[in-house]
Amino acid sequence: MTYPRPQLKRAAWRDLNGTWACAFTNARTATAVTSFDRQITVPYAPESPRSGIGDPTPHPVTWYRRDLTLTEAEVPTGGERVLLHFGAVDWDAQVWVNGLFVGGHQGGYTPFALDITDALDGPAVRIEVRAADDHADMGQPRGKQDWHPEGTGHGIWYPRTSGIWQTVWLERVPAAHLLTLRWTPDVAGLSLTLTATVTPEAVGGRLALRLSMNGDVLADESYALTGTTLTRTIALPDPGIDDARDLLLWAPEHPQLIDALLTLTDSSGTVQDTVESYTALRSVGLDGGHFLLNGRPYPLRLALDQGYWPEGGMTATSDELRADVELARTLGFNGVRKHQKIESPTWLEWCDRVGLLVWEELPSAYAFTPRSVSQLTQTWLEAIERDQSHPCIVAWVPFNESWGVPDLPLRPEQQALVQGLYSLTRSLDPTRPSIGNDGWEHVAGDLLTIHDYAADPAVLLGRYGHRGVLGTTLEDYRSAGRRLTLPGYDLHGKPVILSEFGGIAFKADGTAGWGYSEAADEASFLARYEMLMAAVHDCRMLAGFCYTQLTDTYQEINGLTTLARTPKADVTALSAATRGRTVEKENPLGYHRRWLNRVVREAILS
Image (cartoon, rainbow, N blue to C red; front, side, top):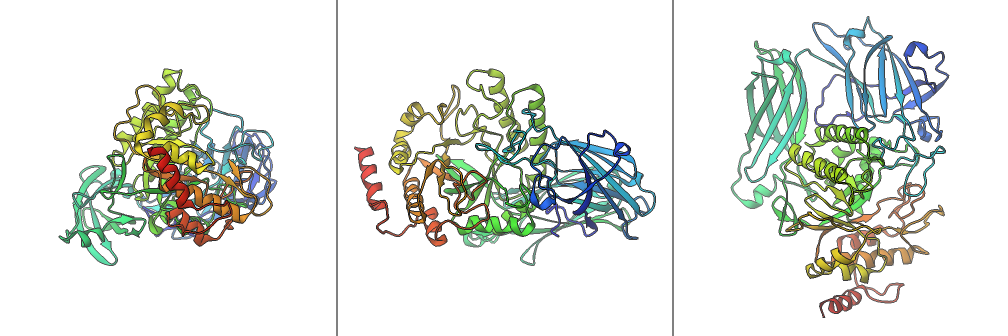
């Protein structure tokens, strides 16, 4: 089992995934549950086949119970603490240990941990969890989860996820231990800034840090802990030549990570806590309409990634998560936009290690209320805190297509929310761009992102072929009837990204469904994909694109693979098209791609 918190790893932990007792009852307390009458496989939601239940109908309250026995090494002694971690529980979790209420959490996509030490009485432990989830609550950040009672998915929404859907795990820690780590790279200064928080018991001790790359030590330092928060900037050795310096940098083509070992000691030098982590040296920037990676223009080739699997729903194994990252790279993409989902940290670790850029997106609510504002903000704060040290993440996306702010052009309070979450994101992380509202109706944001599902490559070239057409496109084009920008949005110098396009449907495995255009067979599917990719690569106004989508997702059959991850066409040809390197050949649509691009471009410029 992969350690579930990749940038703060300890040796002493126990995976609690597996078989739990389960009950569907509205009971308010653990003692009121009269019978746990079924079993469920954690961490799979009861709606998913892998849970062993596979029931998509509403589960307003799901109860879980797990009995375990602590080993001698797990029983806390001498001030040690035992922490119970939950990767994600959708939506409202309350937890009892040995009959005592130990705490709870609201929010379906972010982690929480509870100190259960005071509830322990010997090695026998009973954990009980109440997970409440109102399927019809439109103010709850739900992403793509269906709200219809049958819950099987409709339109662009997918089967629901309720209850525990990410890893549950137990961890014994000393009284003096590390709580959080944050890494901030500075490519220009060739340095890393570490911000660490510790428990009060650690104050007065020291924190030792060792950084290494491919076994070579880059830094070996020690700091006195005079408070519970420590911030230090670590200078890295400068090789003095650009080519050698570039080898230190993280990029999809060269995902170089820096390993970190942190050791906490008390005033006598006795080791209290040891943690493994990692970071990377890389920068993200914007300049002159370009997206920059490590100070240089870097065209984005992204795929829309929904993050669903046939048997697990929103939950996947570590191997499946890695395979998806490698699939995106194999198909020629250098990044993904993880759509309407805050994915498992294990997936982010694979993106860091394999080399895949990520746009992280806040799952939307659909009603605008004071409660939805509070819940969106809290979820986003927790997501950024959890993920901001991952080098793969290069953009934050608080809103998509005005979901949750449906009257954005007319309501100043909804505009204020988009502007507020954009500004909040920038205040928490000024090192990455933030996109206020992806797709249209921009009121704030560092990138101008556009959703355009035109099926004709000539239309895309006409709208984005060169920067001289930007004014006309912004004035005339309505994406789903919506203006691309609202008054007050400053376009000056912002890169333009075609952040949703394509969506070609092809029923490769006979599955019924829909897309934004349709191909009758594999040959025409590949030809249409090649034509669209040739067009967007020739659009000089664009700093990048995001193709819809990486895989089929239930009724949406517009992926490059099926939901089971079977490619719909020759992978080498798909990858070449994605990279803009399609070889010249006659295609089934009856014309050459380069010829079409040249004719359309000449028509535009004339």
